[in-house]
Length: 249
Image (cartoon, rainbow, N blue to C red; front, side, top):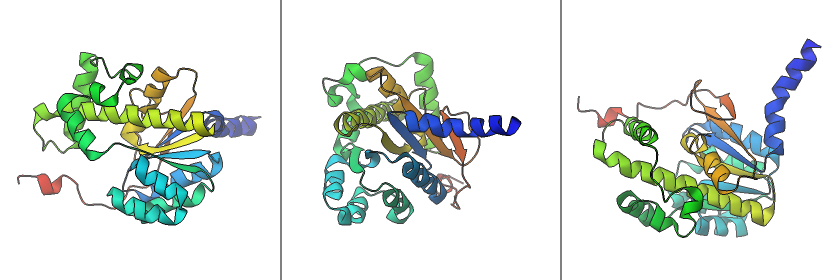
């Protein structure tokens, strides 16, 4: 009986993910083991489409039309080495490739003027037309300040939060469009900050389309209080201190 209960407990996250309309797979961008974990999740999920934070709609469209162009499209995106992401592409078979990245010019404009006008008429659906609660705004600015090694001016953090909100909404919209076009399940590949359930992509989907079910998995390097539906800890990547080069010492 105990063994049966344990097996049922361990199987519960996999069952929840498999039954969700949209599964959000968070990552540490430069961690190969995180991407191997995502690849395994994609293989088990067998999604109809995979939405990538890293690719624009145009880049993804070219790669989807000719799978031989995936590496080239990735190189143009300016993201991490394609080699550490290639297991994900190897895992999803005939799933469609969908890009959710906003053009860089748009992102720069969001930093200056905010997300609502640039997102378009659907901005209210994703809550972009309203200011965040003061405590959440403060918390998110603090996190952005730390994430950028305390090297940017503190008063620039409001713009960084605006960009984060815009991108969360854009990724959610792309996921919902893929769901409507291809059917469930849809997988979404994003950084862990976008996969969190309190204000990331899952929260945006819940606001915009309450009937759509989601399951968010965070592939993290250590136990975290960042909220996900499921956490999978992977070995830390071998990297230099990203803040060291920005230190004044």
